[in-house]
Image (cartoon, rainbow, N blue to C red; front, side, top):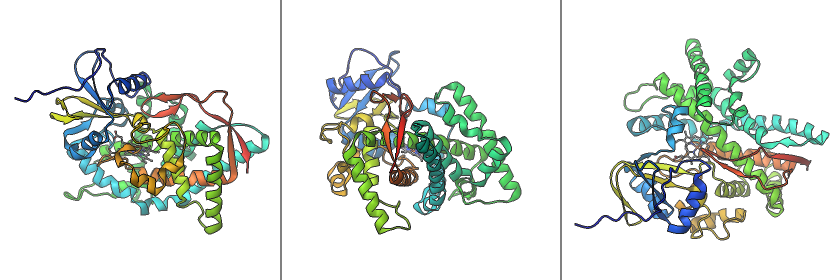
Length: 430
Ligand code: HEM
C-alpha cells in the first residue's frame, strides 16, 4: 500500500481563523514551510492545511469543489447571517444562488447607476462644505455610510425613505455606528430582520412591485418547482446582502483613497484618465474607465477585504502531493497570495499597471482572488465594481485627499480587512 504522507508543519499548535493573531502565524508558516503547511488545532481535534499554490487553490475552489464546504471561519458569519448565500451549502445554496443571481445581472445593476450617482452627489455636497470650512473629514465613517446607503437603496428603494421618515433615522445605521462583529452585535442586527419582514408583508398586501432587489427576490421562482423563496430564506438573503455588500466595498474604497494619497504619480495618472474620459463622453464620463478599474484592482490586491478564505474537506483528497484527510480545514489567504513572489514583482509597491489586460492575461488567474473564484465567487462583483468605479471617478474630479495620520494606518484582520483606526483626511478641492 502507498504510504499517505501528510504535509509538513510546526510542532506548535494554532487555531487559525480570520483574526489578527492568525496573520503573523500564516506569514511565519509560509516562510518556513512554503506553499503547503499543516497545522494542528490547539485542542488537537482537527488539522488545518494552508495552501498558496495556485494549482491547489484551483483544485479546491473549482476542480474538486464538491469535496469542499465552507469551513471554520464561517461559523461566526453564520451567527450573523443565518443561512443566506454566504453560509449555506448543498441543495439549499444551489437553489438560492440560482434564484438570487438574476438580481445581479449587469442590466439590473445599470438601472442602479442614477441612484449611486445621487448618493455620491449628496456626499460630495457635504464634503464641499467641509472643504470650504477647511475641516478634515472622517473618510472611513463617510465611506461606510455611503456604501450602506447604496446597498440599502438598491434593496429597498422607496421603503427605506418611508422607514427613515417614520423612525426619524435609519435603524440600519447600527451597521456604521458599531464596528464590532461579536455576538452582541449579531443579536442587535438580527432584530432588524423584523423590519425586513414588515416591508415584505406591506408589499404583498399592497400588491406593490418596486424596481429594487427586494422585489426582484420576492418575484424570483425556483426553476424546478416554480415556488418563490420561503420568507425565512428571503430574509436571510437580504440580511446577507446588507452586510456582505456594505463592509467590503467601504473598506476597499477606504484603502484606495489612502493608497492614492501616498502615490502622487498614480493619482496624477488617474486624474488624467478621468479628464480624457470626460472629454470623450461628457454625458457619462464615469463609465468604464479602464485605469479607474486598474487602481481598484491593485488596491484589492494589497488589501483584499476577504483576506482569508476557509473550506473544509468532506472526503479525503491530495493537495501539493500530500494526503488531506476528510475533516481538514483548508485555508487560502488572498492577502499572502497577492504578495506571493512567484506571481508579483515588488509586491509591496502600489502599481495599477499590473492590471492592464496584457498583464492580467499573462498571469495565473488563481494568483488574484479578491472576489474568490469558482461557483461560490462573490455574487456582488459587478455591483461593487460599478459602485466603486463611479465613486472614484466622480470624487477624483472634485477632490484630492491628504492623509492626516502621522504613521501609516494599521490593518485590522478580522472577517473583513479594515483600517484599525478611522482615516482622517484633509480635502483639497480640484
Ligand atoms: C469590494 C467589494 C467586495 C469584495 C472584496 C467581496 C468579496 C467576496 C469574497 C472573497 C467572497 C467569497 C467568500 C468565500 O468564498 O468564502 C464573497 C462572497 C459573497 N459576496 Fe462579496 N465582496 C464584495 C462586494 C459584495 C457586494 C456589493 C455584495 C452584494 C450586494 C456581495 C455579496 C456576496 C455574497 C452574497 C457572497 C456569497 C456568495 C456565495 O457563496 O454564493 N459582495 N464576496
